[in-house]
Image (cartoon, rainbow over all chains, first blue to last red; front, side, top):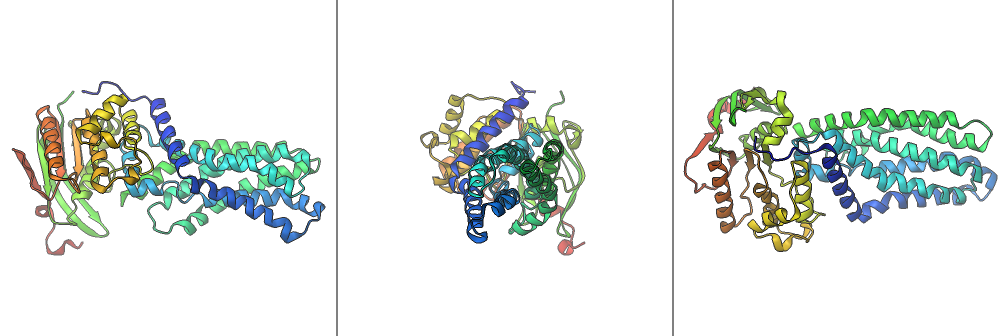
Amino acid sequence: MSQASTPGLMRGFAASFRRDLLIGLRHKGELINPLMFFIIAVSLIPLGVGPESQLLARLAPGVLWVMALLACLLSLDGLFRSDYEDGTLEQMLIQPQPLYLMVLSKVLVHWLLTGLPLTLLAPLLGLMLALPAQAYGTLCLSLFLGTATMSLIGAMGAALTVSLRRGGLLLSLIVMPLYIPVLIFGASAVSYALDTNPQSVPLAILGALLALSLALSPVATAAALRMSTNA
Amino acid sequence: MTPPHLELRNLSCTRDERCLFAGLNARWEAGDLVQLLGPNGCGKSSLMRILSGVSREFEGEILWRGRKLQEQTWEFAQDLLYIGHQPGIKKSLTPLENLRWYASLSGSASDSQLIEALAQLGMAAYRDIPCGQLSAGQLRRVALARLYLSRAPLWILDEPFTAIDKPGVARLEARIEQQIQSGGLVLITSHQDLSLAGVKTLRLEDFRPGAGGLL
């Protein structure tokens, strides 16, 4: 064999990560879209419901979580679309590097550019919804875990629908049922923080969901990508 | 290790209930240049996608170095350079950034080697311009610069000369010839006649089941 050096796994992952991050950062419009949606949708709630801070504080956990979920969903459609269209996906399938790691790098970048900013924005919007200060920590932590899980789950849906011209609606239908547990435990963690219930239980379940999807979702995503490019 | 050779045994492919080809048997050795011929839609690209491992929807056997493809995906991936119909170049990245990714996945290459490869196709001056601003021919040149970096023995090139001008085609043919002489195996589809000696041809329509090919 004439190959001088065997490609290392970490090198390949680092190269994919650097490339995906660079691409993500160059598409500023797509980057800002979900964040703008999050800000606008949440800031409309007090206008619609009224400025009664007791009521807003009651609604805040659910509202913040639902809007974060929708913002995440909004950003998923393009996850593999451009790779599919310009032939990069074909190339990803036949590299010596495992598809698992390349998918993981894409998801990680997606989370860094949507989930993490959403998490960091949430306390600010919590303030707008008169969320009591004791819930901020839990809000951030639950969104931190939850958005990462949602990026991982969403990647499966995006991979399944990548070959369809208008896969957006189907993507939502596939992904939404899987998002529901994340939403329930995420929002209840924040509500528990408002009362005196122990919020560690829903947070632990969120952590478990993240661990589970971290292990399984890239495998499923890789298989779905192979299926989508087969035709 | 067994010298590079590719063998197809009774290969058939069906797309949308239409049989593209069936009973395809062939064996190609190191040093062969194979041109796939056939009218549009006869399954040339499908065959290339099957041989490169992108698509796994086929019946029959493909052997590389005497072993089945499915049993050695990792080894085969290292031996293969496939450039498909879509060049696989990200438009928001520069040519250099695009090549850097490919280089780090399949071994290693320094930036100066990458620039050298781009220079071979006259693209060195464009190395820092986002690919979205390049023309179709230039975009394909960026993708084909991978030929100058590759140490893989098997090349599968689907219409590599699309949108490339005549001097460019001549340069690429020279590179292909070099690959053949150093013991590589090149499979190519092209509607243009290759001006290289010793081209083996495979007419795909010879393997199409008769009468419209409907199953």
